[in-house]
Amino acid sequence: MASDELFVALERVLELDPSDGATRIRLAEMLLQAEEFEQAQKHAQVLLAQAPDHRAALRIASEAAEALGHVGQAAAY
Image (cartoon, rainbow, N blue to C red; front, side, top):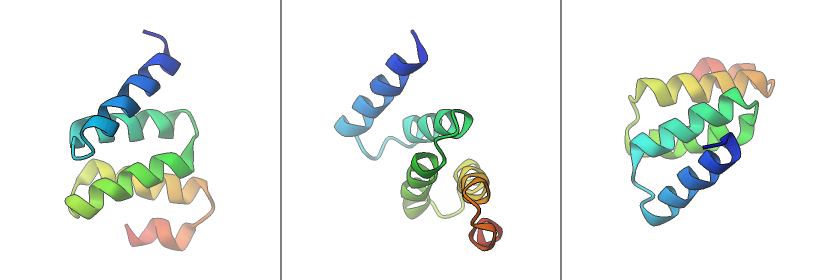
């Protein structure tokens, strides 16, 4: 499955079940790697609202914030 198709499939899963943390973190990781930092951070923040100590979501949110030039925000994660 091509990357674009995988993005669409993961987004579709989240439309059907927004609480699917495993899918959300996978999508956030892929968005981070694709340099879609705002979207990666958004998905990480949604997961952090559900699980504030989620290590992968904290890392993704921090890396995305740093890449966006929000150094203070990155350090807060």
